[in-house]
Amino acid sequence: MANKLDCKVESIPFRYLGLPVGGNMKLAKFWQPLVENFKSKLSDWKAHTLSIGGRYWLCRSVLGALGTYWFSLYKAPKSVLKQLEGMRRKFLWGGTTETKKICWTSWDKVVREKQSGGLGIGSLRALNLALLLKWRWREKTEPNATWNKVVKCCYGRARSGSASNYNRGVWNSILGVEKELLDMGINMNNFWKPKEDGSGWIWELDSSKEYTVKSMRKLIDGVMLPMADAKTEWIRWVPSKCNIFLWRTLSNRLPTRDNLQKRGVEIPSMDCPICHTEPECLNHLMLSCSTAKTISAHLANWVNWWPRNALVVDDFWEGIRDAGKQVSHEDICKVIGVAFLNTIWNMRNSKVFNGVISKDLEIVRCIQSVAFNWVRCRSKRGKSLSWEIWLCNPVMAVDSCFALASR
Ligand SMILES: [Zn+2]
Image (cartoon, rainbow, N blue to C red; front, side, top):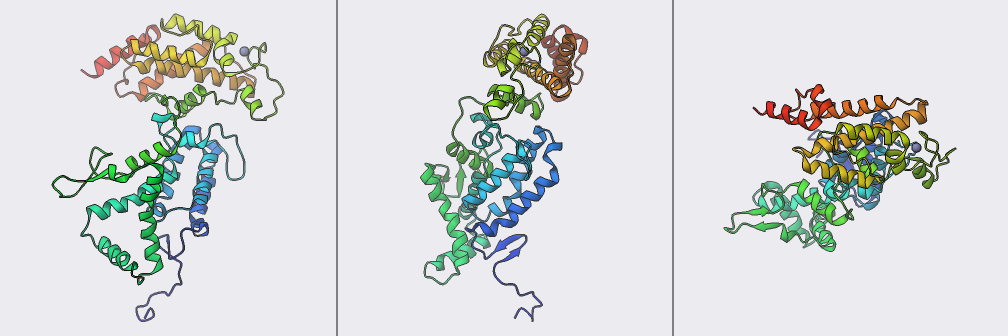
């Protein structure tokens, strides 16, 4: 038959459009091509040449999407998900498949929504389940589609034992997703509901009333991953790299000497590399070290809302947030706050790795210009922000520039 049609005879399992067909997808070995694909992408990108901001976006977009094709048809075994997540995790923290870097935060926390204290990367398991559920949504909303009839035909007859195991396997695992979610406490009947007039279905989790993988994924991750106490601070005017830096700073996950020691890294000295009079920890470096204090005093002269007396990073940030509530755009205060923390950290690294330290006034000027450029380049109305006014009063500079832009 195949010869007559000039087709190639292949044995099961084979690959069709890149997807394996006919293998038992409950077995990890059939997922190896996807695992290999992940691996090769990771080594192509050379983690060490990218900033954490770049690695974050690749983790989120490309690595997140690489499996979409597979995940939309097959339920991945736990071992495969674990392997893939492990690779994403290593990549984010700058390791490659060969080298190891310290992973500073649990992966569960990283993938969580920003609302729940994570970086909003999203877990692959939730992606897989949400993609599979889409078939059930389509089954409900496209009763006359050909594929639906085929499935009904195969699955319907499967009960009497005449359909192949393969058909039964794929559709059964899709049906199994609802049971799995119910065990987690998610009852799908609360989210997809028949329209009152009986003309179709509505999806409660999206304003479009149509099923979206994104909304379903969020719901699953929200239930599956433990909640953090506070929502992640993510400032629109600040680059991802520095938002991630802030996230790490506020949860004390920077490689300061005390943190490195806690993670078993051998360090020649625990002393603060700037003042050499006290051991280095986050609060000392950012707030109570002599250099940090001098810079803070300069900034307090520049803006009258600077929380100059804070001795703990959490209190410092609380002060920045409170100041933000008093001005027209709270992000102005936050932007300057992040620029301060980030510049101190860069100064510290420049001392540790290159033995160079800038003068206090140069550091102050660096903070002012970094914050200025973020607002000017990254806010919609900031193009004509004036440097002169900024140096007198940043809040006034932003107000007058935004007022001009919206005229
Ligand atoms: Zn110090």
